[in-house]
Length: 390
Image (cartoon, rainbow, N blue to C red; front, side, top):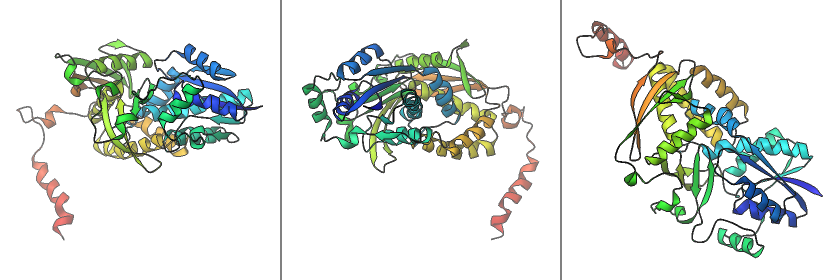
């Protein structure tokens, strides 16, 4: 019997995919990758076996996700179209790595996923899988089966006794990991409709957040966050701590219409408290320690880096080359940044670094001023000379 390794989440699509693949004559081996999502993996494993999977791999890749994916993206200030911190996009190349590893171990020729035929994730998973496992063949059930809607898929699941969480009353599609939550479907598909509160999974509504702000001091070493309020944390611990604090204060929500890789616009809701806080802090620290030309040039690189992640090209030569550049820029991105979290807002209130390029004596308008103003006249004449000559 042909073996297929299915990227299994336990949700509606991949649960139905087990049954569908079995009916196509495949032995289905499921792969679940733990990247910090809150999930009962043992229950999901039992569910997969009940539906028809012959084996279920559960891989804890949380540390790998943080150190090899999240933190490199943080150093690059990677945010697609300035709002999406790429939680889902960053997880897909790691899932692909694990699918390829299991396929080699099981001597399987096929891998499968539960991505839709018009989404980004199909590209991310398949591109990485084809780069890492050149001889593997891809099966995408959602591009082949004939369900006309999510509701018809739910009906099929009930007909075949496949337990699912999604219902007609709560049809949101969620993707969850350490770095954030992606939320779509249901009423969210109308960009003119305000997201209902039940769409948000972890963050408090800003109006219900505490009336007293929280102050969070984050320490960085070479672009990597290592401590909160003078207490050292592991990467996972630090992200979880900031997620809890940010969510409590309503920080980390975004509602955006984004440009999908396949050419359509989609309305997406995201929750990413830790990413929101860390990006704000990291960018502010860079503003303090990087010179103007490097800082401005890096911003252009950041946009391209974000696009590569979003487009599923994590394993591309260009992304690898950009990592080398970005890592070099982080040599002096060390110091502390304090942020104020208050009713959905996240603002930087303090920053300091042993590598700071800020000079109070040059910036001040007080008696401490040591800036030589006489130099300004000549500078301005030279600066304007090419334009004056026209």
